[in-house]
Each structure stands twice: as structure tokens, then as C-alpha cells.
Image 1 (spheres, rainbow, N blue to C red):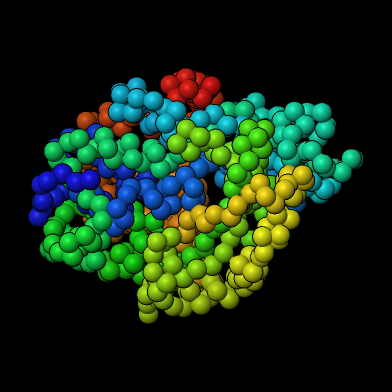
Image 2 (tube, one colour; image 1 turned 180 degrees about the vertical axis):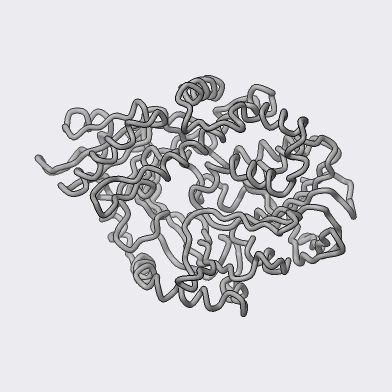
Length: 496
């Protein structure tokens, strides 16, 4: 899928055909029509790595159900600050998606977003006490208005019959429910965004093209790009480069040589799902049910019994089960991790490794699990599980950020990190969750950082306000604005 023009000099180069590149490219095209944009993807299809619905992206992360976003503090209280931030970011993303629908860039919102309740579920006195405290803390904020809490079996049987059936009578359990949760197919959304961009003669999308080198050339950047089908390479220059290549972003960032890239490393974590193959079971569950992560497990390994809509078909997944691979991409090389080790990041890597020995042990344990071991974990969420109804499938690869820390030497981060050159001419996105769900606010911040002067002009300000009506205002602080915004986007996206 490529336009026929082959430019040697363009305005913007996007590396990786995932949700981040698609969002940024579309926004820039809206902000300044006529920008010459090239997008390169090493695979022969778009959105096949982390943005794919069966890999990592899927839940519309809005902090309704993810317990790792609301940690319990030593004094027993629950910190909801991160949950508010993520909920705020997701509301911004929904505004941009509503803009796409209202302006006919995408005709049918159900192609990528569906209403699916978000629930948290726990068992045991200590966890039930925590969930009640979490509910009390969250329900006082307008983002979480309408959240329901239940401990009684009658209500829980109605909400989540699969989770409750076969459970021991009298077992202490509880759950919260947000009816306005969503399932988002970021792979489908990515493809629609890129297809819309590619209708312009100023945009060129090249699949099966691998960016092999990135280097400075005066005040611009020169890339070497290899056509993987013909074996031919070409060079082209650009004023701005965005590296949105998922796990592959670190290698290209290192090749750029910018000072800001020094000290960054990556720790790859693979994932697996148990996928239900029984249509009757799939139909009886309609929710994303998140629990508490095991001690020592990475935050993105929070177990969940997850309803997803993939290509219009309802699916049921459980997991993810974490694992370890030295690949930085699902279709990457076993040498990826070793190739990323440089003189400037080896110390942070070693320090982070020493500090995260429990994580290493956890991942080894996950790798050694048998199918029966995995079913035991699922049994906690679905007591009547039958082995023959589930099959194991591989999810995507995530590369967690390791960076220098003045006090600890190196720290392992579990969020997303945008690394930008001082002059704003190149930026790369590293890390994982909540990633795709917050792609819109992340790209808006990147635009403000990398296109400082243009972003301040009346023309760009007006367009940003058109794409995101709440731009420049705080939905987290303004209840009236937040409620009216959520009501509008809900109607446009069909998720009310």
C-alpha cells in the first residue's frame, strides 16, 4: 500500500504503522494541510504489533477497573491521582475520535469502539476492604460518577455469572462496575486513520520498508530505508521524525545519537492469552473484569477476563500471562535486547536488574507454567472452567523503559515515555500501558513540544480546539465541562 511518488526530501517521517504514528500523522495533516509526510512500516501490514487487538491493545484504559492505577498507601488510604489522570486522558482521546466521526473521516464508530462494562473483582477480607476504600475514593470524583459497588451474590450473579457460578458459598467477594466502559480495537482505528491520510497526494505510506539508519544532516535528518521486497535502499531527508515503532523505537533512537537518548534501555516482556473457543461461554460474559496482580508481577500483567470485539466478532480472553523473550517486537530478532546494550546504558540496566530480581523470578515462573497451571489462574475468575474450551495464543511484545536515575542508578518504568531532541526535530515513544488509550493526549503534548512556534499560532490553536473541544481546559477540575463532553462524545461514538 503505497503512493507512487518517491520523495527524497519531505517535511515529516513517521516510523511504524501503529496507533501513535497514525494519530500524530493525521493530526499534523489536519493542522497543516500540504505537509509532505512519509510513513514506513517494516511489516507488510499495518498495526500488526502492539496496536493489534489480539496483542496488547484492547481495553479503553480509563482507570475504571485497573487496580494498579489506584495503589493503597501505607496509611491504608487509596491514591486515586493516577486514575484521575488516565481517565482525563481517555476523555481527550474520545473527543478526537468523535471529531473523526463527525467529519466523516471514519463512517462507523462500531468499527473500532464498543460499549463494554468495566469491572474490578476481588476476593478475601483484605482485598474486599481495599476495593471498598477504592470505590469510596473514586466515586467522589465526577469521572467515576455512576460507579456501582456490590458484595451480595444476587447482584454479582447478575453482573458476572461466569465469575460467580461454582464459587464456594459464603466466599467473601466484591466488585465494582462502570457501565460506560469501552472496548477499543486500536488496530482497526489505526488502519482507518492511515487510509484516510493516504488519500492525500502529499502522504506516502510504504509497507515492507525497514528504516536501517537515522543520522543528522545539517539541520535535518537523513534516513536510510530498505525495501524488504526488492532489497533496494534509498536515502531521504526530513525536518521532523517520529519513531513510533513500538519495541523497535529504542534501537532507532540510539542510532540518532541525540544526547537525550543516552542512558535509556529496554526490558522486553512477552505475553500470552487463553482464548475461549466455546461460543456459548463467550456469549454469557459481557464485561472486562480486572483483578489484582500477583506479588512481584509487572503492572501490565494484571489478570482480566476480557470481552473484546474483534472485526465485529465477540471474543473472550483471559490473561495476559507474562513471559520473557529477548525480542523487542513480536516479529523481531532474538538479538534485539543484546543489540540495545550500549556503554551509556549498561549501568542503568544492571542497577534496574538488581532491583527487580523478584520480577525476573516471576517471569521465569510464568515461562515454566503448564497449561494446567494457566487454567488454575483462570479458575479464580471462572470456577467452572473446562480445559477444552480454551486455547493458548501469543500476545504482543512490550519493552518496558529503563532509564538513568540519580539516586538508584537505573529504574524500570511501566508507563510511556516520549524522548525528544532539544530542538524538537526528532521524538520517539518508548514504553507500554496505558499507551494506545492515551495516544491522543500524548501526541498533542508531542506537537506542543516539537512544533512549539506553530502550535501557538491562532490557526493551530483553533484547529486543536476543533479536534479536541476541551483543549486548554481541565476536564478533571471542571465537572460541568467533563459531563457535557462525555455526554457528547458518548452519543457520537454510540457508547452511551
